[in-house]
Image (cartoon, rainbow, N blue to C red):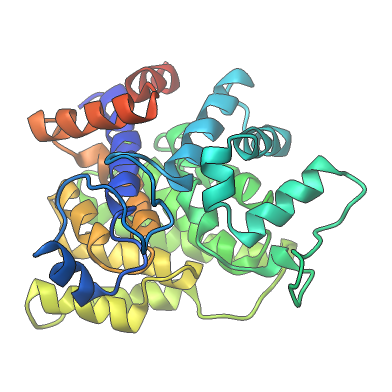
Length: 338
């Protein structure tokens, strides 16, 4: 598979995971299966429990919309990934009410407010109890970081550097950097030296450790569960005894599947470990893991998409994504590959 096809795979599975997971978001593991009569495998309209209520089936949320806009902005800047480029893309995204008004979390909202008014610091939202949103280690750092790897195929060190630049704009802390550097390193490896899906897991550990070290020295060093240690825990469960379904349930209960970076990223790696050789199924399992399903599925998709078989199922889902959201993922992949 050539580089353009691998990039297309990563972008497409990120979008597919985001859109498909938007219907199951916020639901518990067993409630998804009860509500939908089993695991969700196709695009569905989001119900009242989801933030994406009102989206058409196949509609994306903040996860892929930010990934898409950051990629476009990097291309406009002659492929240079700088702080200004990332800020510009985030501010452009903030002008899109269909995304910002419905999906922006408190960390991103405060960052946007600061960048719109350079004289303002990271101020809290009304009624908040803290002013330091930079210290919030939410998974918004990892959901949009794949361009760091896409623009540095096979160059792990540069992908990590780019991930730090992208992450620090909105999530300037040690845990967020650990999680986002893991994902960026895995995406980069998936386009380069990785021969199989298990390779991106080992590269992910390397990225997570480097990101954590850099974060401790050059960012906000914050309290919270270690991304690296939670990744180890997730792999122990994935490689342990029991059925696949029981392992997925245990991952959701023990590793976690929520908004914190130390849950979402390790959860994503554990799901990949359960689906070595089957990228699309990895995304589907993430869609059905419960809680923050759209983000976890988008993260999984970004890392395994380069290995996806681009068959009729893949192409049909991509066609729905492009049509519903009025975006051209195929052309974006071509432009990045060039």
